[in-house]
Length: 140
Image (cartoon, rainbow, N blue to C red; front, top):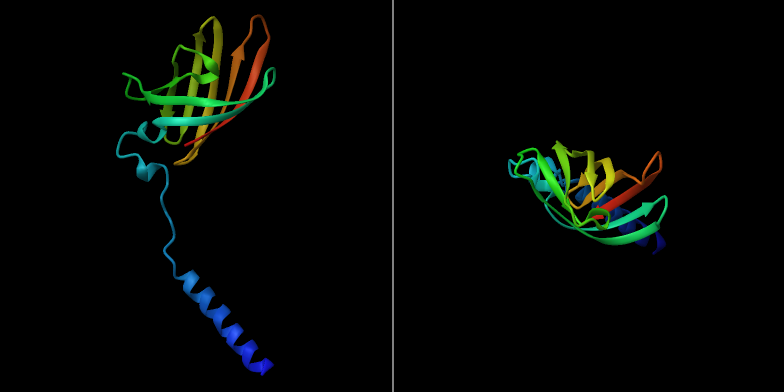
């Protein structure tokens, strides 16, 4: 009886492995969902969890939309600023060029990890040679 149960169990496991290996792979990448505009994959209302070297951990929402420039996007509410922060898109990467935002220099870079996650690092100049280093994960 034990041999029959073991054979049935082994056959079931082999069948499950065979059927699982035949499943279609999910090949969706951020590039394939962009609809032609390289900025489209960054658009939306994102939840951001960030760590500041000065303020510690915080969470809030940011909005990302197009700029009038066809390679730029705009971050609304990043770091609590009411001024939108410009970033340049190239493939799945974004660069925040050095810009003055509400009296502080801001710059940084990020990567679209998948359709629902952006990894971002940026610096906020606090005057002189003092900077706040911020790492963040944005999720939809």
